[in-house]
Image (tube, rainbow, N blue to C red; front, side):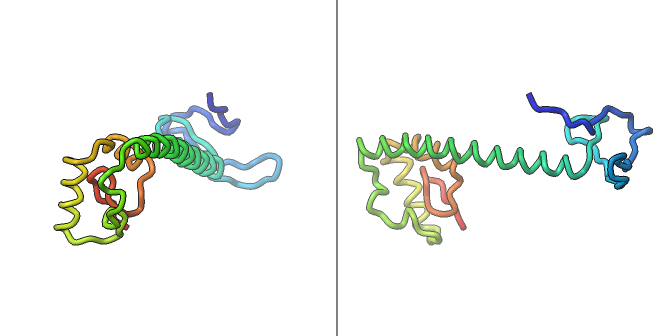
Amino acid sequence: MARRSPWARRVTAEDAPTSVTLVETGESVELVAIPGKPGEVMLRTELEQALADRDAADAYDRHTTAIEEFEQLDRARALWRPPCHDDLRFVTDSLPIADRIELQDICLTRCRIRGQCDAYARRARPSSGTWAGRSYLP
């Protein structure tokens, strides 16, 4: 459970201040509404840090899950060699539409590990290439 900031408090829209003066320093700081929590305000700096921390945690979770998905894909590739194995078009940044359609067809009709490939690509969000029939463009 997330610890609530000592500066977070429930207020109504009419009595919500836009700033407060810190007793310790005499500094005037801005208050902002907390997204998704109607009637609650927080110091802007603390809210910005909390949002940055949440974004970093989400990115870490996505990265960790992508590694797990890649390990599953790698195990599947060890058991069966996919049609993309020696075809450099699958890792090329830019391809003509005809090639992208051909690669999509190969993935959808001839690949037995497309599920693992798709799971990895959805988590990792690759910057380019063709994964499970889906083109990722830079």
